[in-house]
Length: 140
Image (cartoon, rainbow, N blue to C red; front, side, top):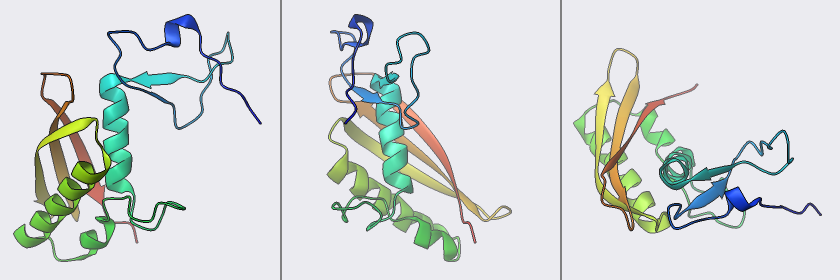
């Protein structure tokens, strides 16, 4: 069993509200500790992972996920984009308690068979509105 150590500079201070470990399990070269991502980057990474995950992909948590990849194989029109927006809104509201969702905008890119999704949100305890833009493409 591996243990995780935190240096004093890695501890959460009053300025760092949220912290997650790096998904790549990258380590600090000197101390060999796991690298941390904090605040805005942690929430952005979490939302991105939530959107790109389909339901039933996570063991023991089948309901977690945006479940939008199936919609990418439909005809790209305003109805499909509206469904993508609804799926993303539901996933964030139900599974990301650290973010307050403001709006989701999905714009079809018909030439590339893709959808550009822009998610506007704020971090709980923060006042600054943030934005995350994802390009969703279908893969065979």
